[in-house]
Length: 423
Image 1: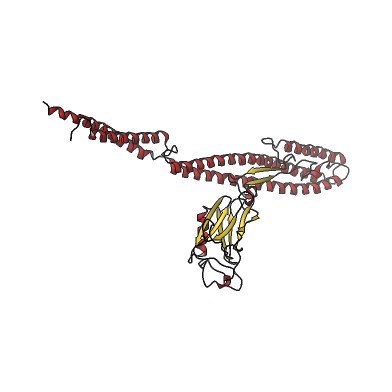
Image 2: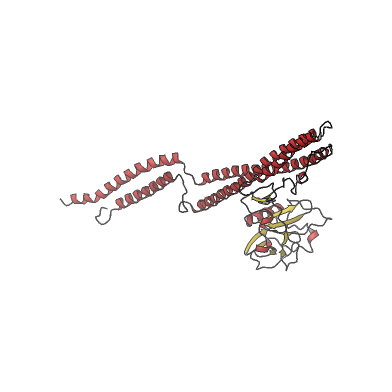
């Protein structure tokens, strides 16, 4: 039906044109930014993930900068240490030369003059081995702490909360991962195990509760997987195949969040409290409470050890203070050779440790570079637009926009047909 009050065809054409314009704006935004997800409006979940990963890439860059700075301090110490080691070799050569019995005192004193000049160079070299205000070999910086990870791990993150169940008695066969958690044949626990099929094991961590239902056919492995899944990885369940003990570890310190394990007929702990030695080993009316255990994860912080390479200091070269190879006999030269041998061995041992520390920092820095590249690649997969595809889509939408405008123009002309009925 034709009407001058309503033009349904034009309304539909306008809706289609508006949708095309919206799609065209979206494509143009993707092409101009290079991103298919440039704001939370595009895809809230992906944008949140992407922002988290961008933050981590930025954190990794800061960690790498810190490692590079400390690495430069160590490298400065190594360069100076190598030079000092070369000077010790020269000093020993001079001392050995002064041991010749055919030399006069004046000749030994001449050797000693060169010896003292060489000896004096050591402290000058050591004092200049500074980078960014730190010197690892002049006794001013005994240790340097460097952040080697962007994650707060190790003892710096505090202790972890751990709960362990009771072991199955040695007189019974240790249950395997395919055994049933609830099984009539487990008569070893008939007295203490009042767990009923379809009961819940409830983990309380701070204000959060995570419930795992245990059916009559739940296996140990299924229960472990259920704990990890229900808590989103916040609580890790594990099983010792040799002792038959189930343990649960919370990833937050007990002091800050608290951690308990209950068995109850209801997921919210409003039902009947149960007991299961196999699961938590406590009385039905008492929740299994976590105990603090030291976090055994690698620390996010590394300690770089420094040394004292000064002549007369407290380290490897302390005995060189006042050393001489002059005199009327070979006594001083012979003693100097012995002292230098000890100093060379001690210095080289210290240099080996510094070298190992420098290598460890380089390895960690290389790893962080690769990790950062991997994260950025994953981030790109999440948010980057396929520009070739968007270019093709742009061409299509531009044609569609022109056709939509033409269709709207045609639809707007339809009511004019009514005029012909009145001629």
